[in-house]
Length: 332
Image (cartoon, rainbow, N blue to C red; front, side, top):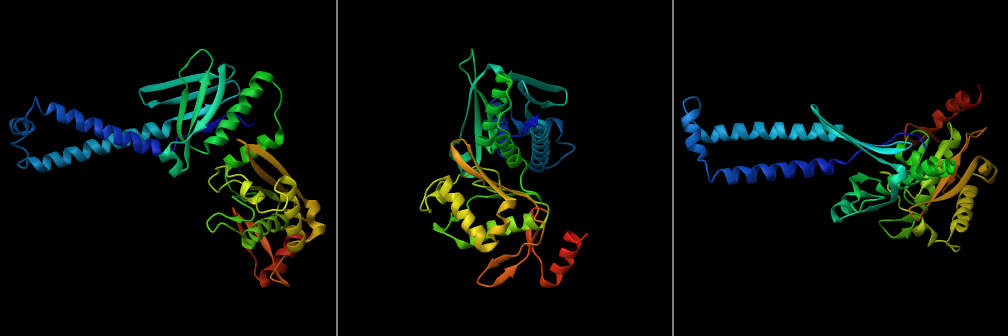
C-alpha cells in the first residue's frame, strides 16, 4: 500500500453546495424583504448614481453569484481526505479558516459504501466509516470508485492493527486501478460479454488480445478485466455465465484458447493470469512481460496485424512501419 492515499470528492459536491448557497441566499433575501423595501432603500442611498434599479440589481446579483461560486470552488478544490498508515485525515477550509480532523484507523469498527439514486446514475458513491464508541458514522460523500476506496481503507486498517503485510497482488491491483490507464495499464469492463447488446462478442475478445499483443511488442504491462475505464468494479459474473465452466478456471481456459488461436501458444509463457475479489466481485489481472521476438495478431483467417502500445492506447502499425519498429526494438 502506497501512503498516503488521497480521496477527492467529485464535482457533484461542488454543484450541491452552489445550489444550497443559492437557495439559502434567496430565502434570506425573501425574509428580509418583509422588513425592508429594497427599492426605497436603493433610491435613498444610490439612486443619484444609478438611474436604473433593475440594472443595479442585475449587476450586484451577478457579482455576488460570481464571488459565491468562486469561494465554494476554492474550498472544494482544497478539500481532501488522506488515508495514512495510522489515520484518515480530513483537510479543508478557506484561507483564514482552515480545518483539520482525523480518525485513527485502530478506532474504526467497519467500513461500507452506499449509492443513492443520483450517485448510481452518475457513477459515484459514499463511504460510511463507523468508529468505536460513537453511533454517528463518518461520511465521505460523492466520490468515484467508492468500492475501491472502501477496500483500501480496510487493508490499511488490517495493516495498522496486525502489522502484517497484506497480499501484494491485491494491494497492487487497488493501486493500479486508482492510477488509471496509462502506457502499461489497460482496464476492460468485460472479456467477451457485450453489455449493450447482451450477447457474446468476438470483437471484445479480439480487443483484449490486441492489448496483450501490444504489451508483448512494447515494454509489457498489466491488463485488468472486470473494471470500467473510470475505475468502477464491474466483475466477471457476466463473462462467467457465457462459459461452459462458469468460474475462474473456465475463464482462464477460454482465455488460453483465444490467446493460442490469435497469438500463439508459445507466447503463453510471457503472460500470467490471476484473480482477486474486490467487494465480493471477481476481477482478472493479466501481467504481460515483453516478448523476445515480434508478435503478430491473427484474425479473419490468415490476416495478421502488428500492435504496439503508444501512451494509454493500443495502436496498429502499417506494413511499412513494422520492419523499422522491429529493427529498432529487437535488433539493438
